[in-house]
Amino acid sequence: MKKFVLGMLVGAMALGSAPTFAGDAVTLQLKWVTQAQFAGYYVAKDKGFYNDEDIDITIKAGGPDVAPEQVIAGGGADVIVDWMAGALAARDKGVPLVNIAQPYKKSGLLMICPKDGPVQTTDDFKGHTLGVWFFGNEYPFYAWMNKLGIPTDGGPDGVNVLKQSFDVEPLIQKQADCISVMTYNELGQARDAGFTADKLVIFNYTDLGNDLLEDGLYAMQDRLEDPAFADTMVRFVRASMKGWQYAIDNPDEAAQIVLDNDESGAQTIEHQTYMMEEVAKLVDASDPALNAAAYDRTEKALLDQKIIEKKPEGAFTTAITDALK
Image 1 (cartoon, helix red, strand yellow):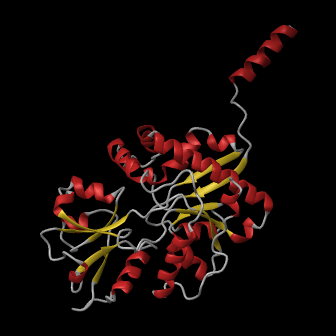
Image 2 (cartoon, helix red, strand yellow):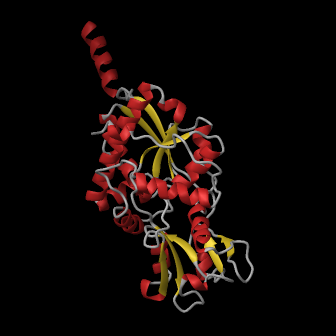
């Protein structure tokens, strides 16, 4: 009888679920929907790199109605992916965001115009309609127009700004003379719609010296003052960069991992593979430290355009990435 009861207990234990992982809980809020733009984080989770660093990760996808700055300010995330312009604008309004790492070293932002259209050079912008994303994505565009001395309130000497959808429809439907695209996303969509490179005039923000820092990692200043949380962020960044390196080395597998995490079902393996190959050109997985010159350029552009009213103090820290060395 005792052997029978013991056998039942052993069997029940074997059938039971495995013990849940009890690492430090970290919630990451992404800037946009699940796609290879964020492949490093999904790969790090899938490959157990966060577990290896004793981190229990939750990754929250973004979208057109999600502002990462508001999510973290409201306590809905521990760390966010954000463009620096949006993060500094939020800090200027009282949300004490701090850049803790900068995986994306280059900008993927372009403006494209049909080669048979009215815009061939920046001198042709005046009097035409340019498509621009908003929700914090408009800041690089406005900084660029300010640098060119072109008003953005319409009129013959200015440009008309179209609040562009997050696709290439405004170009297809001829709602705008030029539209915004990312090298790793909408540029591919434009190509698929027949707007191949030979049929486009392409303005590259980086080549023109107008690139502002894009996908960086941000946490709240008060939380970083807690040594335990700061240590968690060091481990989080280390695991994330390991994920990015794996994704860059294995783009096809990374694209599939992203697809497996896409609950919307909207993504395709073909586009995610294309995206991963392009994203790899922008990310430096071996060095997530913030480049001081790039920060200064971004800050100056925002101050010149009065997107931020005062020079930020404490908007970034090197303590997290320094601890990786």
